[in-house]
Length: 149
Image (tube, rainbow, N blue to C red; front, top):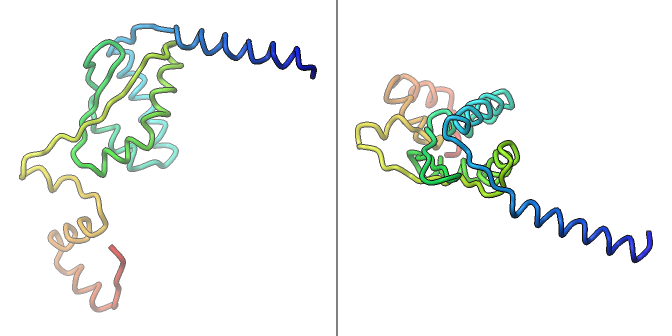
């Protein structure tokens, strides 16, 4: 490869970046929701249970053109989604033919009576199971089972 062809190659990259920067298409909420549902089902099949839980419970909202927002119940769920957030924005941007696309995530504080529905740590899950079935604690003690939580 000659120096001239490297320069041509770099020029092509710059042109592609310019074309990507200027790509803009309006994404309707209905189309976004369809893509959201399809992706949610695909991650379930891949075994990403935590992300599936977040995405299946979150209802995307359109906050302004090509800017969507979801609300989650806890900071832990927010972090679970944030791990995939950039990938999703890029994937959906390519799907809809736009580079100006974003998905934001906020934590929505739940009323006290609904907070128990979201058990995120192993300790919370264990405590809830013991509350539902107190014999579980006896069984854990009897079998001398302990786990780090």
